[in-house]
Length: 309
Image (cartoon, rainbow, N blue to C red):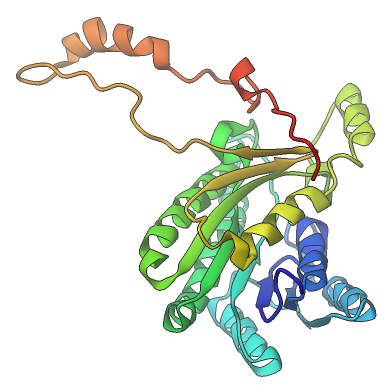
């Protein structure tokens, strides 16, 4: 028996990268899959039906069941049609993985409204659309799961990606609240911050040394790695896991902390500006977060070896 036998899964951005691997692995574990991909380029331009259909053919050739969809997650009605397609074709829908995305990188000082709006629309609005089109169905059947896609660009930060980072940080918050609201209805949601060599990461400028390192790590940083975690989170075996943020890249899996107060300082009568500057800031400074761009910025975050099962 497969881990996803009897389940119908919608995978957005399923024609390439992490979405492609997620769709294929989910089908291998018994899921019937709606493979959605608009087929645009990394900047969200154009459309091509081939990527989604190619993944469907791969799944069918391996004995699985899948159907292609080439509409955009930016259109709520289009996402509604994806849901209806799942119902009409396979008789149900039980989970959604939503890695569909684009990049329009630019320093904030030069970013246009179009570059900002386009990324927010695909990522944050796209996640809203996916949830809004499915949440009542999941609540009604008392069964549903979301694998949402955040990023270290939002959770930690990355220069030149304010639009992308803002959307991805928003998705982490969205996932948390969907998990809280869905708990009584057996609706789960988790966010994944993936690390993988895809056409999106290939589009990010690198100096020669960084480009060489990226090529050397391409096999280790396969989109297969976060896709495996995605399918694991979609499985009924993970039904007790919700509201979490995970990382997956290379041979490492991570669990992220979520923002909570580190220390709280109280003063009788409250704080005035001078007191904040003189007393509060110096006390709090030891807990300030540095402007690092790496998740691995302390020995506490070193990978813990786990024997293969």
